[in-house]
Image (cartoon, rainbow over the protein chains, first blue to last red):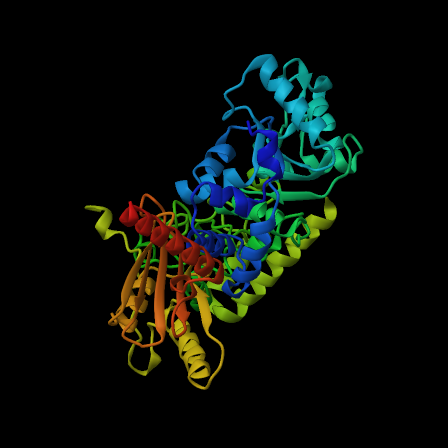
Length: 361
Length: 148
């Protein structure tokens, strides 16, 4: 898609060639810092680094997925910034977006891997089926595993985009008919080469979190700090609950009991209606969705926990955390009655539980 | 229920007398306190500071409260680079509201800057050099066409 000489330009050169002024570039850097969840005081340093950054080759592989993640990415934030982001990378293979098809597309993939061996980024969208020799998802006669194995070999780093490639996602949900696994499982089992891996989970991930991770890699040339599940801490460092504007109602023990009661109308906490905010690490409560309009809790529906491993199999979306996976119904009654003190205890309990799950895996 | 307007998404409880039932939620006041601290520091010769509004968990109504309490000042400017950037000083001098929009006028980033003048308004050194060569070129062209 991009000519060779484009790759040798720095990002600053490329942007100036496109007529982007220095104020425009500074604005781009300010917005980039904001989407990387970096403090605004970092903007000058980011501007300096981005100005000199080289455009990395990016290969985007689509496996057992619904294209929701690619939809999310291509609708990220703003046409201007997103197109700038695409100019900042050299997207050499993406089945949905590329003009080439058939043999030409596969040739583009192999050329990109050969030319940029050891330097390119692989973005993986979707889980990988292992059952019955991987016949459930094949492209150009190759199984997803074969394609990923080849691509991972020469990759500088791998980004798992979405819950499917990060943790298995919906294809892996019980009874997992295709034997779907995540990228990290394949690295652990030795099916593919072990490379630096960033899990950008979410179903789909927040658009600016995807571009934020790319911007971070572009700016610093390295993988950002990761949490226990391999997710960038900048976006997955805190729970939805911890950053939720409805949190004070939880602390006061004010809960909506149905979706149309007085509590729901007053914007009270949705914990008892099954909100998974307390155990879900993601940036929805601050970054929000659709250009910052809202996020599920603000729209009156609890969090589904879509950025957590096995979220689909953790019981009803509408059962309170304290009932299904997490213990007994008494817990929640106590939390409701006693308010803050118990509330903090419940949050601590769910965090412990999260750690236990992490260890089991 | 008769319509969307009946669904309570905004906070109905205002701080009750004596701190009773309706404890106030949201982050507008904490942000204003942060601005106050930055402004104190700047007034005493300290460094300018910037607050990224996108990094704050804002409750519905917080944004409006911030705008209402900071008010409108006497300076406003629009920068046309990758879509409009609107810069305006609030009624609290030294506190600037900078909102970056894209070509389709959606907000891509929004900051409150506590400073004498926001960085993006200032001309950077490289642009000074470019400006000088631009002016020289214009002068040379003009003088050439006058002598012909």
